[in-house]
Length: 198
Ligand code: SAM
Image (cartoon, rainbow, N blue to C red):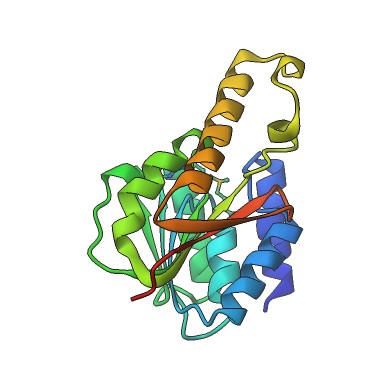
């Protein structure tokens, strides 16, 4: 792995306020990919390509399709993917994820887009999940706010967002077709799998 290039991407993210996965979260995700022999990945929320690149680097057989709706970030991600020579294994799509209709199925769908949209993303993309595949969602803890009493959250927007994340957690817990495990890693990660493996 090119440590210098990775450091540059992380530095760019910091300087430009681009939210990328925390170290503990990325470690969990990449270990999960290796352990479960994942080879096809769909990511919602590329930002500047950091997590897509980290996932692709775990194994030369891995192919990633990643969707981003912000043009500046998408263009930066294209540059970063090129720097790593991963153009043939990482396909970047510049579009709102909910307008993307894919035919392929994936071993892993990684939800890391707008945090209030997770139920929509889940329902839009579950058709693209292999029967024994996984849906992983980042920021389930949302910087500790999900565990806080709502009266402690002063900003109305933030309260609304936290409500939506809580609703997504409930949605996962109550979904009869899937089982979900929640991990306190990074900003909180959930791993969801179909109940019946046919
Ligand atoms: N996965 C990235 C990483 O760790 O390197 C970080 C992704 S960042 C947390 C979330 C990104 O999702 C933002 O760049 C945002 O523009 C994008 N996004 C949010 N909603 C989206 C949507 N509906 N379709 C496509 N991209 C979306």
